[in-house]
Structure formats: C-alpha cells, structure tokens
Image (cartoon, rainbow, N blue to C red; front, top):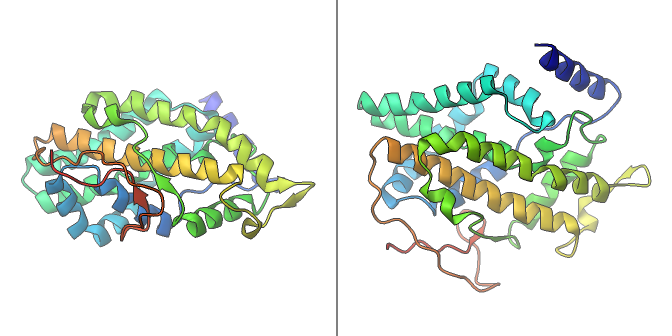
Amino acid sequence: MRRRAAGAALALLSITLGAEPASAWPQALLTALGRDARRLVPRSLAGLLAERETQILEEARRFPVTLSHRLALDLPAGRLSADTVAALETHAGGALDLFKQRRISEGVVRLGALLRVPADLADPVLAAGPEGYPPGVVREYYAFIEESLGKIPVVLDDAPALKLERRDLPGYWQALLARGRGEAALIRTELFRDGRVVDHRTLDYRSPVFGVASLAYSRAVTAIAATWTALWREARGDLTRVPSAKPIAPGSGRTSAGSTPVASPEAE
C-alpha cells in the first residue's frame, strides 16, 4: 500500500510540475493495431473480430476504471504487481466465461477489447517512469507514428508468442513492459532538445524515433495477436487455417488496415 501511495503521489507531483502524463495509443492507431493483429490469428477468429470491430473498439474505450488505475500505477514502475496480474487474468477470464455460456458474440467482443492490455504494455510511452515527459512530447510522438504508418514495416516480433497458453500470458505481459523501458528514454531525448519539443514534421524514417515507433508498433501487433490466440485456444476455438509468415519486399504496398505486415495470411 505504501508503494502504491508513493507511486500515486509521484504521478500527481509530475503533473503538477508540468511533466506530461503517459497516455495510451490514440484511437486511430489502436484501430490499425487491431486490424494488423487480426492477420496473425486463425482465420475463423479474425473473421469474428472483424465483424464486430466497432463494438470491440467501444468496449475497449470502456476499459474498467479499476484496471486502468492499477496499470497507471504499475506501468511507470516497470513491473506489474501480483494484484494487477490477478485482476487482468480475471478480466480475461470474463471472455472465456461468455464462451462457456455460448454467448459467442459477447465473448468475441470482450476478447477483442482485451487488445488494450498488450497494446499498452508494448507502448514505450507508458514505460516512461513516474517523471513522464515534458508537455507536448507524447502528442508529437503519436502524431509521428500516425503520419509514418505507410512506411513502417510491420514484422512478426516474437513468433513463439503465438503458441502461448493462457497460463503463459502474465509472464509474457511482464516481458513486454520491460522491453519498452530503454525506448522510453530515447523518445524523451529525441523529441525534447534544448528545452523545446521537437516538431514531428521535422523527422523522417532516418530518425531514431522512427526505429522506436517501428519496433513498438510491431511488438504491439504481435502481443495483441498472441493474447487473442492464447485465450481462443483456451476456449477451444477453431485453430485451423492459421496464417504463416511470408516476406514482403519494401514498397509492396499497405494493407487496408493502414500497415504493412511481413506476414501475409496464407493457410498452413
């Protein structure tokens, strides 16, 4: 309790002093992440998710306040507490309960909305630490990603993750958070120089920020797909016709999702 109270106090202090609190992926990017992640899951699941995309995004926006609060405390510290992990597992279990009750449509929506968890854990912005960022940095970072989506080569970040079981997810989620710590520092260094926020329009694909954005986006896409697939496997969903990785040469075009996956869906 003392640690959590101290974390909350530090977060409040950083806001008071002008540091920018971390925020999650903007809606446009969250939509693109979900669409790209669907290209890595079994086609039956991908179809169910695509049919309910609007409801899924609405459900994601209504993410439980208590869980959001727990994550807000843990993410700056760089580690998920046991209580947070238990709460996340319970929330994920809600989708499985709906499947067991044969409330398939509701279960798919709950499952799809879970993209918020791996997406946020894979986002280096949320691993910035209690000090956060100077005002304007987060805005410029996300604006840069949105404008760069056509150039980001989306890769399969961790192929074995797509084979995870539900029991493996807590450890996987924790590892996601740990990987973003170093990237968070680079975002601050590159987008805040000489006491001023750097305009994202002055950056291009040669900037280290582009490298961070590319890695983070691909990591989030893979993490969402891994989370969905692990829970779908637990629900005994159809796991046939799983896409296999197929290299795509640079400049081969974007998908309708607004990103270029290196895994073109081909049934195994």
